[in-house]
Length: 548
Image 1 (cartoon, rainbow, N blue to C red):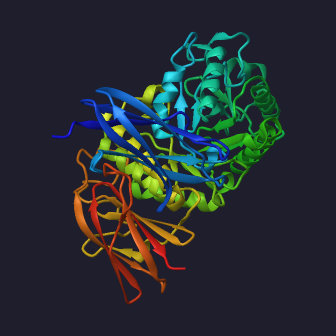
Image 2: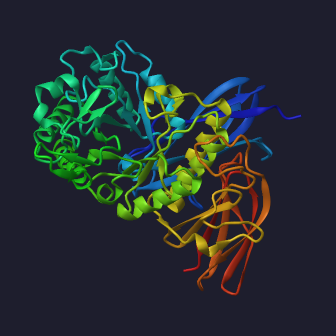
C-alpha cells in the first residue's frame, strides 16, 4: 500500500506579480513515511501549457516545503493556472492540487478589494493579517476609518481618539501600508466627500449643504454635517488640500471616495436647489488630478456609487474602476449581473467592484453571489481584517465565515484569477438569449428556479458560465436561502453560433477539487452548437474556442 502524501498548501508571497517580477511559489507536502517522489509543477495560460518543472525528491516523514520560480511573459493582464502533481517512481499520481496567480501592470486591471479596520496603537499582527488574504489574491485594501476626523485626516500626534471613541495610531496605519506594499497590495484611504464633524461645521457654517428649510443636512444623530461638495466651494477647496496632505505625508496609493447615497440635491443660502450628480463626477475628476500629480500612473481613485447612484455621471469619470454599493431596490440575484453590465458599458470597460453585504452564515447566498459577480467579470469587496467577511456597511462589524465557506470562496477567487482572460474585466458581456437548456428555464427576467447563463466574449472565445438557481425558494441575494441549489448532471446546452464554426469546447468548475480544463464533445447542427455539461453544483464554465 502506497504511503499517504498530501499537498497541504501552495503559497505565494504577493497578491499579483508585475510584468518584470519573477513568480515564486512554495509547495508544502506532508508524507507519512520516507519515500522517493517526483514533484511536478505546471503553469498554464488558459488552455496553453507555459512551463513544466520537476523536482526529484527523497521525502522524509512529516512536512516539507519546496520552492519553484518562473519568469512570465511581460504582457499583462494575464491570469495563469498552477497545477501541482506528486508521482511515485512508476509515474502513479499520489496527490494533485490547483491554484492560480496573475500578472498585472496595476491592481485596478483586475481588482480584488479587501479592507482593514484595526489601526490601534502597538498592533503587531499586520503581517499575519495580510498573509491571511493572499490565498484570495486580495490586491488592494480599503483602510476604513483610519483618520483623525472626516474633515481633518491626519492627526495632531501619532496616537489619537477617533470620532467614535476608538484609540488609533497613524504609526500603525503606516506600518500596514508598508506591509501591504510588500505583498503588491495597494493601500487606499477611506474619505467621505462631504462629511464634516460638528465642531468643524460650527467653525464654517457657510460651507454646509442645506435642506429646503435652510437648515444643515445631518448624517446620523448629530454625528456629521453634510458640506457643499460642488467644485469651487470652500469645502471642496479644503478637502482637496487634505487629499494633497494625505498623499504627501503618507504612502497611500490614492483616494477612496465615499458618499452616503443621500441627499441627491442641496440648497444654497438663497434657497436655490442644485443637483449633486454632476458635481460628484467633477469632484472625482479633480481628485484624480491631485492623485496623478502626487502618484502618477501608480495612483488610483475609487468612488462609491451607493445604490448605483449617480452611475450615469460617475462611471465615465476619471476614476480607475466603478464601485457600486448594492441596496434595495436591487434585491435579486439577477440585479447583480445587470448592475455590473450597465457599469461596464457606462464606464467604457472599466473594471467593476461590487459591495454587497451578506451574512457569511448564509453560505449558499455567499457562493451564488460571488459566482454571479466573478462570472460577469467583476470583483467583490468582502474579505479583509483577520480573514473576516463584510456583513455590514460599517466595516468593523465584519463577521467570520466557516472554514468550509472560506475554502470554497478561496477556490472561486483563484478560479476567477486563472480564467480572467476568458471571463474577467478584459472581456465583454455577450448575449445570454443565445443560450438555451432544454427543460430548464434560463430567462433573464426570472429570479429563481432557473439556470442563469452569463456570457463573456474575448478574442476567439465565448465563455458561458452557468449559475445554478434550481430549487431555490426565492431569488434574493441577501435573504437566507437555507438550502443549496439542486445538484444537476448532464445538462444539454445549445448555443446559437451565428454561423461561426467551433474548434474546441472546454469545461471547468470551481466546485471541483481541481481547477483544470476538461475537453467536451459537441455537435453542430442548424447554426446551433450542442454540448453537455457534466455537472452543475453552483458555478460551471464552458469555453467555446472558435475556428479562425
